[in-house]
Amino acid sequence: MDDVTAVVIGAGQAGLSAAYHLRRAGIVPGQDAVVLDHSPEPGGAWQFRWPTLTYGRVHGMHALPGRELRGADPLRPSSEVIGEYFAAYERAFDLRVRRPVDVRAVREAGDGRLLVETSAGVWRTRVVLNATGTWDHPFWPRFRGQEVFRGRQLHTAGYPGPAGFAGERVLVVGGGTSAVQHLMEIAEVAAETYWVTRRPPVFREGPFGAEEGRAAVALVDERVREGLPPRSVVSVTGLPMTEEMRRAREAGVLERLPLFERLTEDGAVWADGSFARVDTVLYATGFRPVLGHLAPLRLREPGGGVRTEGTRVVRDPRVHLVGYGPSASTIGANRAGRAAVRDVQALLAAGTANGGRPAGASGRELAGV
Image (cartoon, rainbow, N blue to C red; front, side, top):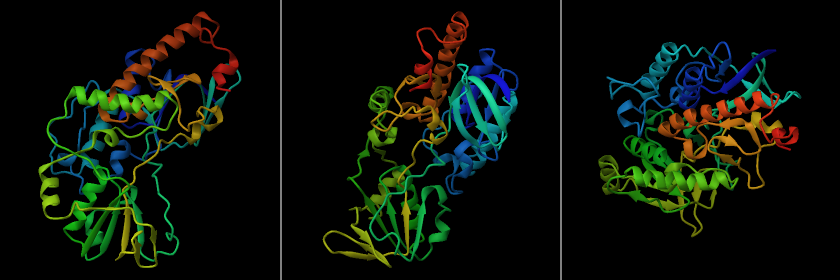
C-alpha cells in the first residue's frame, strides 16, 4: 500500500487538467499524487473514436491548460491527433500516468483517508479526483423485441465508420450530434436509412455565444445540485446547424421518425402499424457517468445522481467529480480541474489545522453515511 496526498482516476481531458493543477500546487504526480488511467494509451475516450471523425469535424475541442494544440491536420483522425497531443502533454508536465490500471473500488481506510483499490495495487489517499468520464458506460435503451431481432445492434461506442454499412438498411436511434454524424455518413453508402428520436430534434441556427453557453451549463448544474443524474450540455443547447447538416436535411436524410414500438426478427414496427425492414440498429443514445467504483462510499442521492457543489461531492468532501455534469466538456473539464485543486488545497489546509480531518466534518459525514 502506498500513501499519497491525491489520487486522480482517469487521464482524459479532466484528469490531465486536474493533474496539471495539482503539480502547480506542489502536489507532484509520482511523489505526492498518482494518476491512474484505465485506457491503454494516452488520449482518453478520443482514442476510441471512429476513424472518419477527423480533427476538422470535432466540435468544440479546447486545448489543455498550459499547452496549445497547434498545426494539427484537420483531415487526420481525431483519435490520432488528440492521442498524440495528450501523450506530449503528459511528457511535457511529467504527469507520470500509470496505465492500464483498473480502479475496482474506493472505500474508507478507517483513519479519515480513502483506499483506492486497483489492478496495480492499493493507494491510501487524502483526496480523490475522479475523472472517469462516460465512455465505458454506454446507455443501451430497452425495446420490445430486441432479443429476437436477427440483425446487428450496435452502440456509438462500437461504431466502426460508414464502410461496414454499405448496402444495408440502417436504423439510427438518438437525437444528439453523434446520431446526426453517423446518419449523414451511413446515408452515403447504405441502401436506406431511418432516423428515430424520442423527441423532435431542435436545430440551433445562428451564433452561440458565451452568454448562451453559461445558460446551458447552468441548466445542467441545477440538476446536479439537486442530486439528479446529469443531462449532457448538448441536450439543452440543441443541434448546431452546419452547412453539411443543412444539405443532408434538404436531401431528406434528416427526416426524423418517432420511436418505434418494437423490433421484430427483421425490422421495426411503429405504433400505427407501419413497418420498416432493417439490417442494423445503431444506438447513438449517449453514455452515463462511470462511478461504480465509488459505490462503497454511498455518494448517490435519492434522485439517482451525486450532488456536488462545484466539483466537491456534498456527501464526502474528500471526493471531487471532475468532468461530471456541467463540466463534461473540454473547456468545462479544464476549469473543473483548476477549481477542484483549489478546493483540495483548502481541504488539506483545514485538515492540517484539525488533526487530519476537515473542519466541521465528523467521521460519518466524511464517509457519506
